Amino acid sequence: MTVRELIHQSEAMLDEKDKDCNVAKVLFYHLANKEPHQLYLMMDEDVDEELYQAFQLGMKRYMAGEPIQYIKGKETFFSRDFTVNENVLIPRYETEELVENILYKIDDYFEDYESINLCDVGTGSGAIAISLALEEPKLNVTATDISKEALVVAKQNASDLNANVTFYQGDMLQPLIDHDIHVDIFVSNPPYIPSGQEIESVVKDNEPHVALFGGNDGLYFYRKIFADVKKVIKERALLAFEMGFDQRELMEEAIRHYFPDTPFEIIKDINGKDRMLFIYYHLKEEL
Ligand code: GLN
Image (cartoon, rainbow, N blue to C red; front, side, top):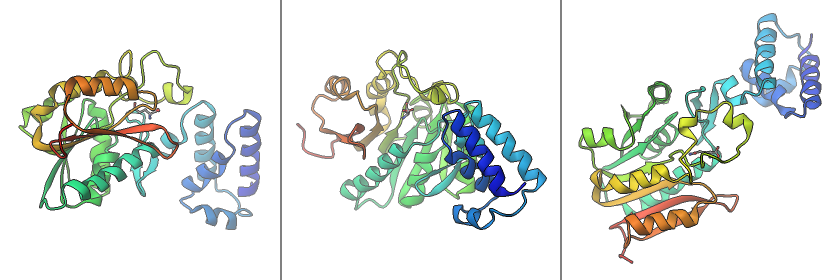
């Protein structure tokens, strides 16, 4: 069978089940270790047996509802390939925007620092912590997660990408408290989906719930962090979070409670949805 025949056959199958037809090509060039444009040049070649089997197995998993990123075992984040599996949340495009904005804030508020301590709480695949460590050499990065299985993935990514990140296992701020760590920049993309909320089944049935759900209103972990974070930040610090698009009002209420005089900002993502929260602790004039 030629590559063309195999791809056409699979596209027809995907189409029939109302699934994304591009997946056939994406999976094929991934397994064949080719770039998309190279696939076009090999359309009339015969598919070798091993590749054929691997491709069919991948298609089967996709048809059964698994995300393509877990099947490939990879997702690109901030232009780098990260290993992912069912123990970590698949890094999202919106989270690249969080990383980008943190880099801008570093220029704005920490320009004259020789070294900057940063932590990422609930690091998952390590995408945020590793990207920041690689983009800004002045950062001294610590990352934590409650999931040992997630940390295996994060450590693998740090080592594959040559990033200098220190990882600790533990619940929320506890590892930072235990190691007496105080940071200039506190970052977290905690689970923020309200427990009862209906979400896409490809997410709900595959991604770790410990990385998705944040209690009744989705803010459980933010409140936990706000209540204790002063134990792990310096006198002057930036707090940076990803948040749910529909959480502005609840979030403002929580901030007014825990940080009554501290300036903060909620920034929209590229889709115009509230997505990032920055709290400027002693970085700007008090309100
Ligand atoms: N953005 C993710 C989603 O919508 C949720 C990530 C999170 O809870 N931190 O699936």
